[in-house]
Length: 69
Image 1 (cartoon, helix red, strand yellow):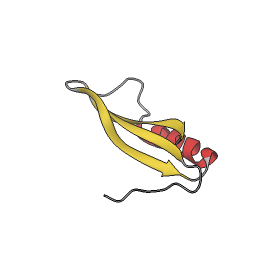
Image 2 (image 1 turned 60 degrees about the horizontal axis):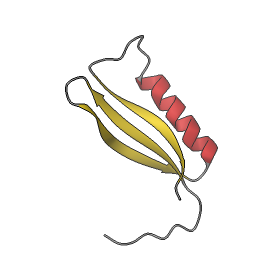
Image 3 (image 1 turned 90 degrees about the vertical axis):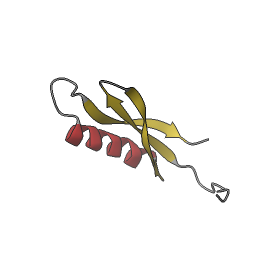
């Protein structure tokens, strides 16, 4: 794998899988070139996919984690 040099600030959204039986684990990571877009993507993902009154047995949640340092 090649080393990547960041020339601009990027913002991270972490997707985490939650499972009733096996707990939670990292699912995926998304990177964005601006903070507003990253925050909005996480909100939109959770609004679309996590809209029940209670947590189902399996789901994925998006969390904005801020700039990559």
